[in-house]
Length: 85
Image (cartoon, rainbow, N blue to C red; front, side, top):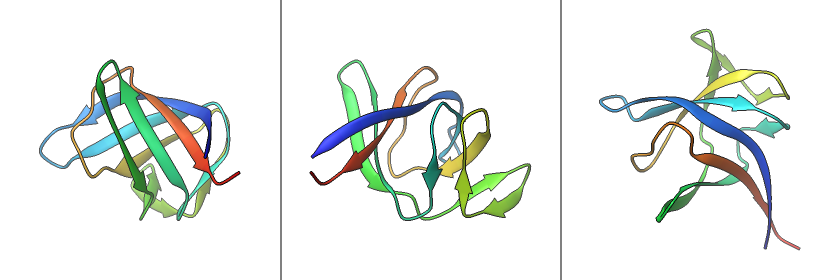
């Protein structure tokens, strides 16, 4: 497995379990990602993404996308794309 950082969590909504990610690379629904900050990390598949409350299939560098996450996270967490080698 390889990991490539594609963004950072810039805001986290605890009750909704949604992370807003500022992308530095491309990301799309169905991608496997890892979110990590310090000792806290988890992997998940992106089920849905939104930009300005509108569902989107993908995002590119510079976009800020909202992703429903499986576990709590924190602002500043690194978001990496996980791919099979």
